[in-house]
Amino acid sequence: MEKLIEEILEAMQDNLSQEQLQRLENVLIIKTHGLVLQKERTDLIVSERRWEKALRLYLASKRLENCSEGTIENYDRCVRMLMQTIGKRLPEITTNDLRYYLAMYQERRRISLSYLETLRHYISSFFSWLSDEGYISGNPARRLKRVKVPRRIKRPYSAEEREHLRCIAQTERDLALMEVLYSTAGRIGEVLALNRSDVDFIGREVIVYGKKSKKERVVCLTEEAAYHLRKYLEKRVDENQALFVSLKAPHERLTSKAVQAMLRKLGQAAGIHAHPHKFRRTLLTDASARGMSLQELQAYAGHAKPETTMIYVTVRAAEVKASFRRLVD
Image (cartoon, rainbow, N blue to C red; front, side, top):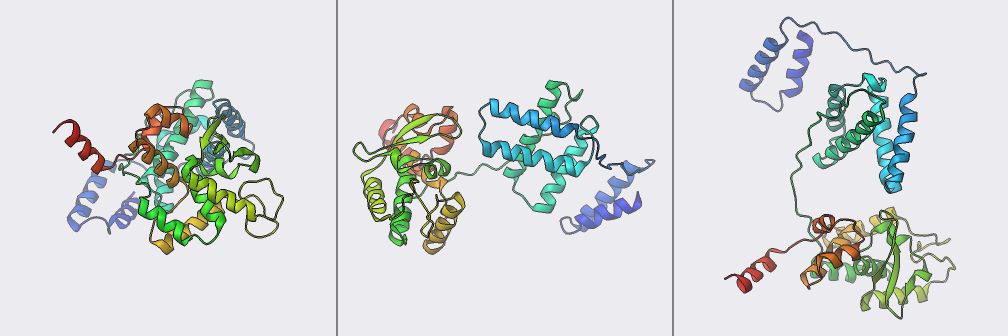
């Protein structure tokens, strides 16, 4: 027990003053007095693979709930890492085991509070399902407290920032891609899944298949987006039906990582925090500022709930002030 207290004090010495360290030492000594510390046996029994079967069934249930494959992969990875780290059978896992795992994960990987809350949500969802299905008698995740995540306003691109990115775009493809991302407010996966046949240049419309909603929706192209997209396609010499492809042969369908890398490079050159999803937020914010209703924004974005749409829409302080002067003052 003395060694444990020494290790705790050593781990906290850079974060606490001398008085606080002394106070911590006193509390630890008092609270652990008379206790016997015994190392818990956590050897993983190889023959016990019941959790893997349970996990497969759980993931199947998430597919029935219409979760995207990306989300399902995140659930799978999170649960597997948890089970391999703890090394216990499902009924033996306690709330303290889960707290220990989350604390160790955060300390070792220095993850954000937002990502920590995401992990907590994945773990809680899995153990709630286990409890409901009778795999465990109680739910050890029930007493895991939500992580308090500081709420920050995610800002869209300003008109000046979008123009700066357009000016330094190095290829017609990159310029067309940025315009399409903005005009359609599409998720990066939805836009990159588009084929040439999905574009109606006469009506300036695009058919997008929502990976989350599993539904098709029609979105629009601005005149700028249609112009640059047409110019890009006219210069293409490949026969790939994908709307956006790599610049080099064999001109395969463009990937999300390639787009993220392209925008990161442009953003660094322009001094702008640039990433694909920011175009979606920008369009929804701009459309809201110009009078599009919440219901219309929701349909255009392909959101199941209006609350989700509101998260994306940034209300500018200047607009609030102007509305107050017009309607109240």
